Image (cartoon, rainbow, N blue to C red; front, side, top):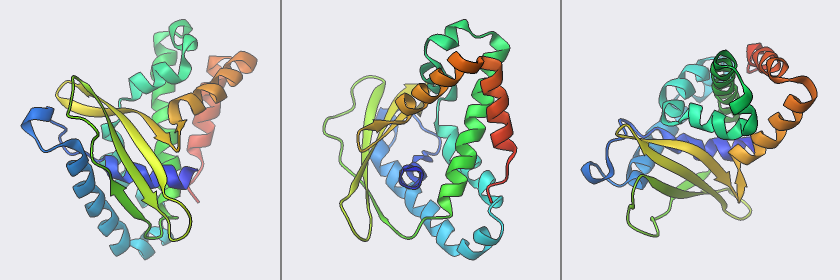
Length: 202
């Protein structure tokens, strides 16, 4: 699941993310940037396998700036976000972002030249919300559908959810964190995230 999700997330470095009418359609930008990212991975594969920590900067700089982590954190926490203090919200958002950096960097090491396709948009852009559809084609088996829910915010398209074969990233994490918060509280969840994030990608 993590590997498949990352393969799709490789496509999310959307550059400057300008207003829809002023730039190429988002799926074209996703396709072009995906190709550049994959070329870089192939060219540096052995170096990255020897030193996986170098991937942190790659993911952090190219992929994750295109996510709206505050919005994702709000939806992941649900009601708990409203009950959290400003400091708890900030710390959770920071640790959640780092968790995704660590997760995607580790999954990147498993990339093995699967074909990734960006599908045409079913409709023209409408307002500030769009879904970019992609699929990962493994060497064997059926294609895996990966959809990106994106919102136009401050002249930049930002991802606020990723759906892999119908499974929402936000919904998946919401279930996990809700259970942890009920049993241990918000501070314990943040502390647990911080501890996990301190571990090496190896």
